[in-house]
Length: 321
Image (cartoon, rainbow, N blue to C red; front, side, top):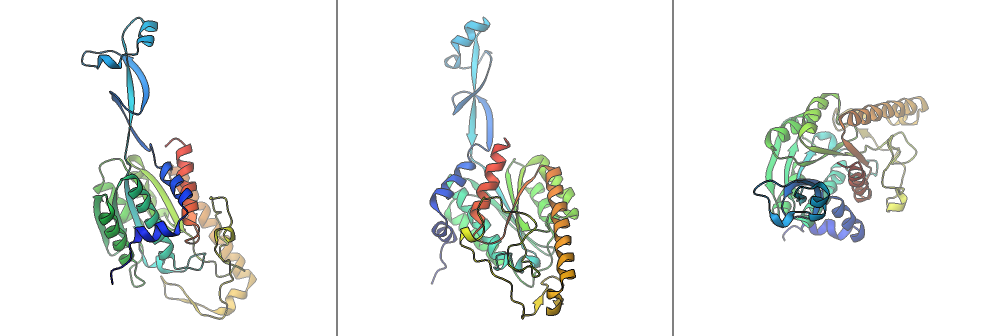
C-alpha cells in the first residue's frame, strides 16, 4: 500500500485561514527593480534612448521640464533552501512530549506546503557530522514529496551528533542565487561553533531559524522553556495537553547515553541549576542570532508549528526584509 502524501497530511491538519495567511506572508520577499510594466511603480528616472515612450510620466515630466520614465518593481517567486539538522539530538523528546524529529518534520512539511501553494522552488540540505543529504532546487508535488520523504528517512537515533556549521557551509557553496534559507534545529543551536558559518551565509541570503525545544525533565509540566512562544496563544489553547513528565521511568541522554537517576529529578538544587543553565544558554543563542540579524522562533510541539511560522514570517516582513 503506497505511503500517504506528506503534503496531503499537512494540509489536512492545518487550519486553512492561518495557512493562507502564512502563504501570503511570503509574497514580495524578493523584488527586483526593472524598466517596463510590472506590479507597482518603484520610482522615476530621466528618459534615456531605448526606454519605452509609453512609460513616460507626463505630469512628472512637465514638473521637471524633461521627460521622466516610470520604473517598476517585479515580484519574483521565493527560492527556498530547507536546512534540517538530523543529528542524534533530534531524536530526543520535545517540550510537548513528542519526539523532536516529529516536530522538525512538520516544520519541513509546512515550509514545503507553503512553497507548493506559491509555486516556489525548494532545495534541501540535511544531515549531521557524518553525512549530508542534498536535493537540488525544484518545484511541484513530486519533487516536494521526494524531498520530505528524504528528510523523514534521514532522522536516525543511531546517527552521529549534529554539525550545523557543515550544513550551512554546504548551502553557501551550493546556492549562488539569493534565497530564503529556513534552518530547522534544536534550542541549543546555532552554537558558538556555528556562528562563523551563519555569519557568512547571512551576507548572501535571508536566514530564518526554527528551534525545537527540549523537554524539561525537572519541571512540574512540559513546555516550561526559557523562551516564550511568539504566536500569541498558550499551549493548551493550541490543543496540546500539558502533562508532567514521567517520574518513575529511567531517562537517558540520546547523545551521551548517560542515564539520569530518578532521585536527582526531585532535588530542588539540581532543578534550579538546570533551569539557570538553560536560561543562560537560551540568552546566548538569542544574542548570537540578534547580532547576525537572523530571526528565529521556538516550537515546543507539532501544535505550535503553524502559529510560530506565521509569527516568524510576520516579524520578518514587518522588519522590511
